Amino acid sequence: MEQSAGRMDGGDAIFAQGSVREREVIEDTRQALRREKREIERERRKLEREKREFFRNRDFEDQRIANEKQLFAMKWKILEDELEKLADERKQVEKQRRFYQYLNDHREQEPRERAAKTVRGELFFVGVEDQQALKKRYKDLVKIYHPDNISGDIGTIQEINREYDRLQARYM
Image 1 (tube, rainbow, N blue to C red):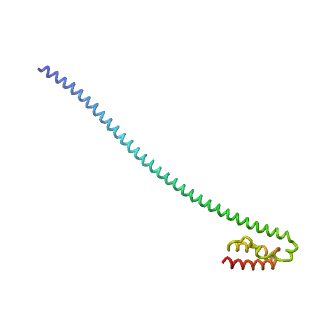
Image 2: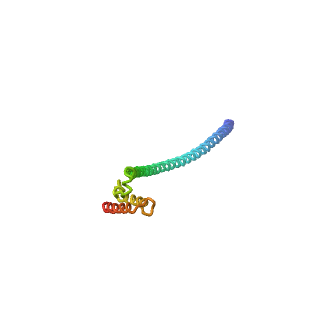
Image 3: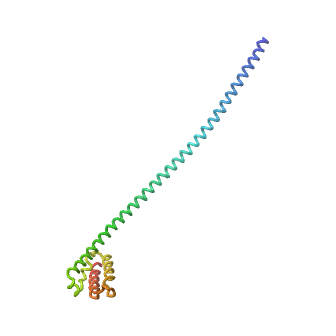
């Protein structure tokens, strides 16, 4: 029995040695798994940070795009308003051009007769439809026909003043 006990001691030693090796392998495997688990956890946290950063950037870009759309809409409205103003100014310039063309044609048709008489006041204000246009036309006419100017004439300026007073009372 002693032999078998010695053998068992030897077998136990071999078993114990095998068991120690297995334990070491198992412990090494556990440590490797723990390291891998920590690495996976670090990667997961890193991905979470990247995800939050991505959504923050996306929200920022969405806000920026919304702001740009709003700014574009405001600029478009300004352009439309300015285009309307330009169209109105073009109409006013066309009216003035027709008026001065009418005066010029009228002057050329009857040069001798015109030299003796002054032009009737209402002809100077043809096409004027509101008080602002009336004032502007009056200022322009006074600059041209004031008696101190070369082309100025007292009779003409008096006729312009009479018509201006009449129209001013009408538009008020």
